[in-house]
Amino acid sequence: MKKRERHCLAEWHLATLSEARLKIRHLARYLAIFGMACLMLCGCGNRQPEVQEPQPQDEKMEIGLSFDSFVIERWTRDRDMFVSTAQSLGAEVNVQVANGDVDEQISQIEYFIKKDMDVIVIIAIDGNALTDVVKKAQDAGIRVISYDRLINGAGTDLYISFDNTMVGQFMGEALKEACPEGGKIFTINGSPTDNNVNMVVSGFEAAIQDSGLEIVYTEYCDNWLAELAFDAVNRGLSETRDIVGVMCGNDDLASQAIRALSENRLAGKVAVVAQDAELSACQRIVEGTQTMTVYKSVEELARTAAQMAVALGNGEEIETSETIFDGSVDVPCYYIDPVAVTAENMDEVIIDSGFHQKEDVYLNIGYVD
Image (cartoon, rainbow, N blue to C red):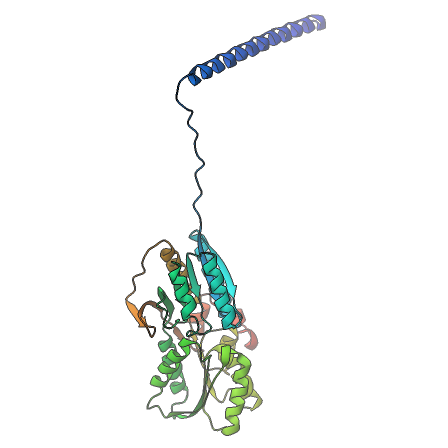
């Protein structure tokens, strides 16, 4: 085909296309006019057009989580697992930490009440000092959980913790095994305002009955401050160096107790038992300066507590097989069993569970895969 003929054919196609587009625009205009007319006719009736109201979005459940402090290593684990579990269930968590100040914790709980939280979960600094503010929360229709530490006389909706009496029993049994011939021991306990301390001491003393072990020196460490354990052991040693063991309220206290023993050239010669399975404690166990610790799955505790908090926030009741008397009423309680940890079962309990990595636990003595 010649260039001139191709050009003429192209012009014909363009003209045809333009004409078609013009017809389509006219048709669209007529249809629009017709539609408007129909709407006007419909508007002549008495019926009002239906307006769809915007649907309100469901408000998220709000949980207040009140911590004593983050001085002890485990509490950050509790926080992270609780928050992530609650969020996965559609709840929002407001975390407050009182840094060991009871008045500050009371103030923070009052803040939760003003914010109209659905549930408040409390790691109490002083189990006796929070009774009134907890009752104030309950009067406002807020559910309250005693987390890890029982709040006395308040009748909280739930108490969830480890079996602290069993923790003490494990510590006593480990000390008996390490000191089969008996001897003098120190007990360096945690905060006197922590209700769990009494449970641990009760279990420990029951375990060492008729064992030949004799408690010759006892101190309590306010607010679980580890440096107080260092001073306490030194004071005890000033009275007698003839000891075979030290029971410490937790691994943080044990770290300072062992420092005091080390400065007196007794580390590794005196059995030391504690709880929490902190990384540093596991390292000391495989090194030989600490005899045992008690592993408590804080992830399981926090996850279960978050699930129960959401259930309470949804108006459900928590059924438990046990209760605990808080000095006023029987409170539903849920216990998680602890596990005694020594050098013999370190890999099985701590490493295999993923609680700590093997290379970290054995770091100071040379990690061997």
